[in-house]
Length: 210
Length: 210
Image (cartoon, rainbow over all chains, first blue to last red; front, side, top):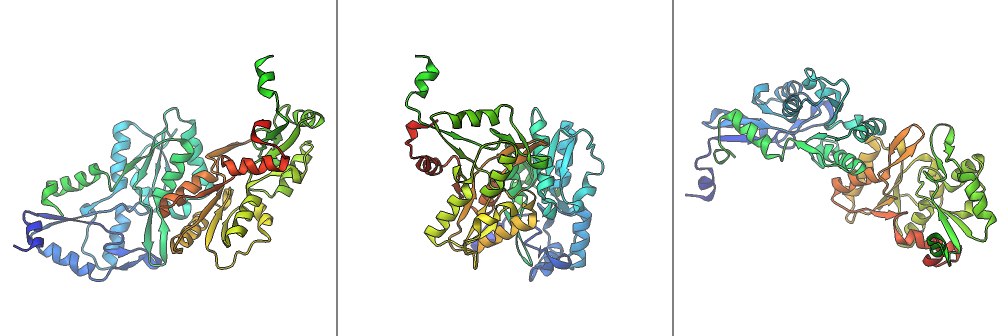
């Protein structure tokens, strides 16, 4: 048996990243990466289960899926594991009311969350909204909390847009960690819980997925 | 001999910080800290040498001294050790041409520096100029360099303004360090070279100063 065949023996599902794997974001939404539309289509025609696992935190799942469908991908919202919904679950479980340092595009994911009188900060890839003013507001709030809680949707260093490399949320997370002398809780890849929740949605164990 | 007198025996000079020690910056320039104007005046009337050692990197020394004189301090430009002139010396010695991620207020300090075709980034407390766009520009430039050099004027976590705590350059330095996988060179306090240059300007050894 060839090495790749051995490695795939017992595999019943595939987790696919989105940004930088299926497409590069950029002007006009972005462009599909060569061969990725057909690869998704072939996987979906196969016996394998397919799920999409992303750290995208500038867009709601709805917006992301609309964009991907426009680019030609066969994908629906309930096939996507993304950090914002995972963060919402944590906020509810722990009675946390976030100050949101996020991009407007992902704000709909937090519609059901109480943001009055904040007792934590949730940060995501805010792009241009990472202004000094917005960063300082989040910083001041954390410094006022007796037990500062900072939740970051991913900790990526940068990502690729069609126009070039772009600073990701992880850089700004490090800035707030250093300024406040705290450690952020990361929701999203590479957190094992995040991958587990994606596998759970597929009904698979880790050894059954690639 | 009392403990304080023992400690001061042999002391011939005093190094004074400025921000948060002599004054708090803020609306209209800032406000002197209680008793500090008189304390500087008394030190200057004493036998002790006096020098001011600051990590202020939003303003040129000229602008800073004009502000402090307006607030009532007896201070002149040649009594101030500040990181921007120290950085300029390093840039010249090493043939470095910086991309400047700085506040417009400190730009005059770099008037004599060649900034064409940059081969390093110099960052200072840029305040509102720490926009995503400006941070990303510095990041992209560092990623394009074969040997990325990042020089940071200080590494403060935050400072106090009359209106509250403000993020300092150190937080943004950490962001670029993480994103690029590099370590910045810090010019300014707490670097021993920086203190040494202040002592040298006073003609004193470390044990002769407080």
